[in-house]
Length: 326
Image 1 (tube, rainbow, N blue to C red):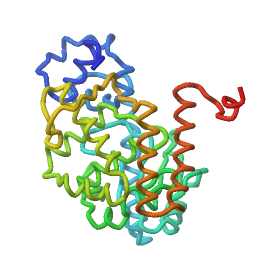
Image 2 (cartoon, helix red, strand yellow):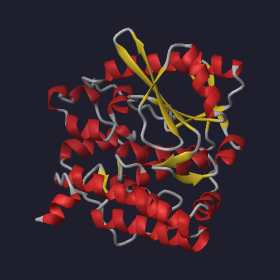
Image 3 (tube, rainbow, N blue to C red):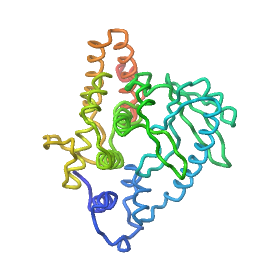
Image 4 (cartoon, rainbow, N blue to C red):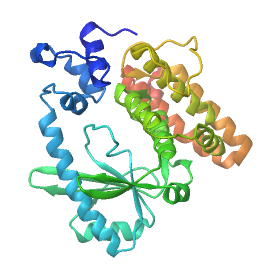
């Protein structure tokens, strides 16, 4: 793995794998780009390293927690069941918004409007963005009616509700996914959300912590992914996590039985373009066999937009038509 010595040191400290004297670290020479792109600032702060952005990130999290407490009360009044997804995991990370799976989108929207939230444009099915200003801070809540990106569903929502558990966050009991669903939602988000297609070191450490703290049922996880048509894609994600963890920490996670020949370069690990296309193509063919041509065509359209966005982000291609026309 192509990390320099400072980056390797931060990776080891973030995973509590090194009894290193924190006072010897020159905070003016921290690899801040590596820390920020891998979402490590709050983990390292917890270990005693001062990160310039950490104080503001903690302030934002406190605002979001206070808002979530109020939202929980108003959702109860409106009889809206909810599960917080992709937010407030056991390991701390910076948050710009909160994602909430809701049982009744219409009632959830009414509840948020009652306490001063307004809707902003959101161009995805099954997802609504609501905003509220708290002083000078813009607070964003994403409401989800499905575990879906670009209108493609990756888990059965009723199962997420039925198997959800509680996590205490600053004295508030908040519904969160069970460990198996937390891993699946993380995987689907990294694999299929248009702004991701990568794995950060935070994602690796978070998945590892779930496996270490819980008796995770890997067979159940694979069965859920297979039933929803993305088992191969999930295995690509989880094996990548295992390879990164083993290479960095010389310790195998329980789901990785042997080293594959695959190599991971830098962190975050950006999925190669050929993998991005291949993973989506495999998903479309699986959907075609299992669910029919109409659903497969929907995925083909959505994933085509994904690939265009990724090309624009990585290579500055502003228009496929313009490129083809040259």
